[in-house]
Length: 122
Image (tube, rainbow, N blue to C red; front, side):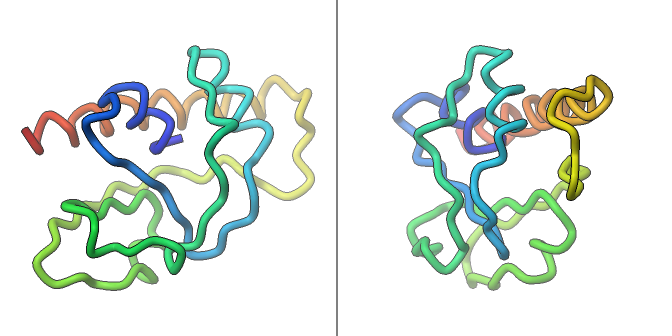
């Protein structure tokens, strides 16, 4: 979600990429709730932090406590953290409105945080 917001809010002049410590593929519910706000993340894919050259980034941002603890430390890089709840739970019913509301809540919480990231980098 954060990468999708970054692309939508920052435009092409800023490079943003997301990666996980244990990538598990693109979650269809994440795709669905981002579609609801007009952001198509189908071109994104689930990457491992090992797939990216973190030295290419000015800022390293982590969005869950597990990633914060597992993400490599890159000397000289600005690192920030915000813990958002992970809306995924095994066995979720993709048609359950309460499940979708949880994804929407996380989506809507991530937006202003990502927006602030770019404001602070300019």
